[in-house]
Length: 365
Image (cartoon, rainbow, N blue to C red; front, side, top):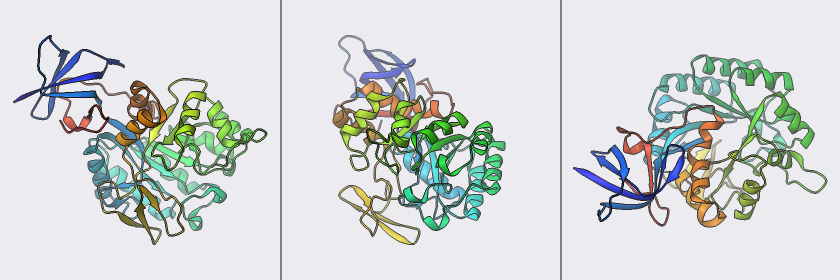
């Protein structure tokens, strides 16, 4: 049975287009065509486009990659996210022991080729302990050849990799060496000065991890890493859940960037997305409280949000246009990794399509 889906906006050929409808049969896209005068579609939507892309997913479906760095966990995280409108997922391993990093790298190789598995984000362990956030300081350590070897192994297998590090803790020759492998080097959990940040960018830092969070605030005379990031042409991820960053500060960063297409959204999702309302990390129970994830000290510990909700938040609370918010959640993350943007075409399965209604809530089609 064919279903006719009309949308106010369909992302097609790199732009939001109007006056179109999609025909779907058995959960697959058959064609996109003009909506004819007098036609009555089976479903009316606000947005239809390729599914979203999330470069920072610590866990989902009751699973944390740190707790079980296995191919099974990667598949569970990806499967859960795909059921929520995020078609391409970068599971994220946060600061841990070297052996766990090796195990996660092996798991990534074993899971590679699975639909929706985009690559591996290694967040830490080469961070500034003063900006550790929820990362365990016992595992934060200087850059070493073990990490370099793991990155080389992943890249040798053709797996896209993002590495979050604090640029003030890693020498610039090493940053350049890692970037030259094709690893996307992202600065985060850092107290770098503006000068150190700019030097890191010169060496190969091309991205910033969850802008504002785990960074010192900027001031009129101390722009620091945050001011340097906003003023740069590097990419910057941001969590748009209303807990990590005030709506007005999200808007400020988006509007202040000197070049368009450099801001993107991440969920920073944890095991509670599509799973129970608590999980264990570093031997500590993390719980959902009032829509946020809180550790035993009462501090934020990751996010309880999916990327489709972040997209809606960006429009409804931040004031971004639907086209801008959609690109931040779907297209720009792929630009960050140097990967090809997807497009709607005959045969596209439903789990690689995002559909939002007039309230910007996800619709299953």
